[in-house]
Length: 366
Image 1 (cartoon, helix red, strand yellow):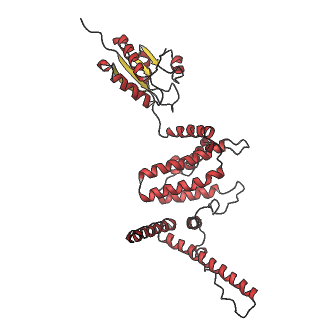
Image 2: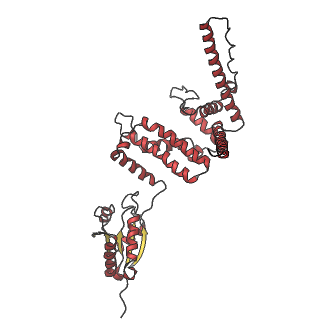
Image 3: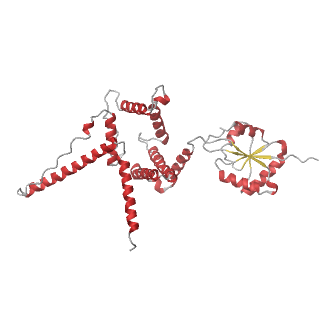
């Protein structure tokens, strides 16, 4: 007498970042052919979609993985060759699914034949939805996160950016990945804070993303439009022309070419950005290299003390201005040589740090 054909268990895995019901054709075909569709979650998000498609499902008592494994083994055995038993795994529940599969493998005889079927897949960037949801939860349930404002978060936005830059300079790709996550958190955090405003100035993370997408599309007509370019240099020229047009008001009044340059950035980076912006807009280069203020001669010792003090203060001010002008010229020299003054100064600082470390290590123990 031939043995009854063994039943098969299909574990249907889905992602919580795709709307319920948006399943692959293979998943829908498997569900329609199934003898039974089981889950241990009465609130499983796929149940409503299955009911709408005329597919019945059953909720079983899932106290633990071992208990579920036994029930699924029995259901598959009862189905035999009549059809598959489908188990609706918790969306994104990789750990729970892994525990269940391990428990089935520990059953006498190894349990039923199992197929792990992915019913939906994440698109690139889908994990950003998890970040938004996590930030929403923290903003409500964490006392520290709940009291933060744009102002209190501002130092972190700067610090995290510098830490990402340091990881990049060190060539530490694992650290860079982590630090980029910290930078991304700042974006999500500020957007979450802004979303709470009700005075008409609020916006959401979607507004932030929509704005940068629109800007990228607008400034890349050679990609998203009909414009043809000969190479990267022409792309940059087009970019600058489009930015200039964006700075022009409907009445035809154009903002300064330096509009939008953030003066809160480090001084060397600020000088370099001012010069780059001015140069691209046709500002005369001699405005960068004009003569430094002359330093006044020391006050006449024979003069009265108040005049001498005033002259001394003026001389100090002139010397300060002269030094600033020389530094500004040095930035221009670096740019003319194709170098980034900020990065070069950082590199020089790292070399100095290494020399100090080497000197410290050469000193005898105290």
